[in-house]
Length: 520
Image 1 (cartoon, rainbow, N blue to C red):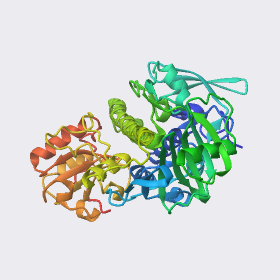
Image 2 (cartoon, rainbow, N blue to C red):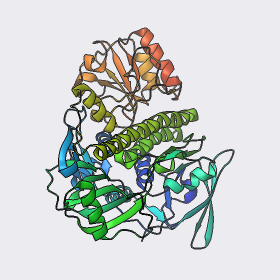
Image 3 (cartoon, rainbow, N blue to C red):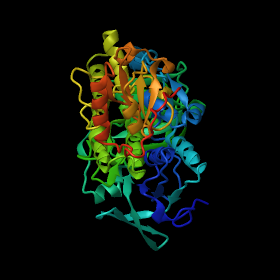
């Protein structure tokens, strides 16, 4: 039986972080906090886990994050790969195709699996470490105090007051945390109503293909799932105002009309109506309370990035919270979460909106022309678009945790080889064991691991530096500082940058010898 309030090994008051919500955002935040040495508490209003398909596609950039978090194997074993994206017009005629090979990361494919399975993997990973979601707990108030957050919990008619250092609101679109913070999802709702379903199809489809079928009446997104099943998104007719969910026969007729062919829908297991949104909160944090996932932003599912943005939210916040909890960083580091993820989540909304508008534009073309066509795209532009869709172009340039360096757009972006790094610290990637760093290494050896770049299979030119240069990589794989040559001036600048948010070792505790270069 899942533990309830007060039944875990550690008393509730010992949890410095309370996570409100047991969905992907909350579960992965807990996983990352545990990896960084902080044990949170997770509460969920639902009485038990759901078994709904919902968000399915895990993007390449997030697969790298799961790899770093020690979770990649169960995801790859449970999911199915999508290596090609195809757009089909009336009569299932191909209009365009894009291949993910060559996008520039370790995992050049999407991994698709039902959301309930994603949550099961994360819960089992946490259970292996003795952490369980506490179901059936309703959070009724979250009030920020002078030294922490006072939270009121209710379960089975009992009330509990919890003092937490921090609260992570991961409760989805109806987040109580967001409500208590006085935040609102600002933006717009797309016209129309839509249906999402988990079905089987007799439509002949090549392996590893995700498809969008467009016609004069609308679209169908068809995404493969394990066990020869499919997730579909389809728009409803404008005059369909029923509240009752469609039957299997009605949904089959709708899909056949959209596709202009018989797609052979059968074995309907789950179906739901939904609205598509383009919304985000003005701020994701207020010092001790933070919002993650759908509690903070909602994007069109046609972009396939909603659940992925939730994972990235969790990855960004967890290492910062852990450093503060361990006394290794200044509390002000937490302000960067709202800055960084605010920029990145807006980017997700923009990319999803581009995809949504593109598909709806094709629908309009089909209405005006029975045989629409798309000109072949420029290969370089197609590659950039795929990297955007794969979330590989996320950048935190402009964050206070990114050293300002003119004409250097790569600072703030992801280091392509970051998945080869080990541990949870910052890494200083060097290409020459430059003398003169003894004092720096001693001051930062607890927080920064020096790594010889070529041991990662990384050449200086690929890192944008000379043979004497260096790159500082944060625990989440993003470049925070880069020096073309790690001379005395660069070492001083790096020291100042780190000291802006991390706590250096006091002089009396710093080791006399410089830290050794780590081998990966």
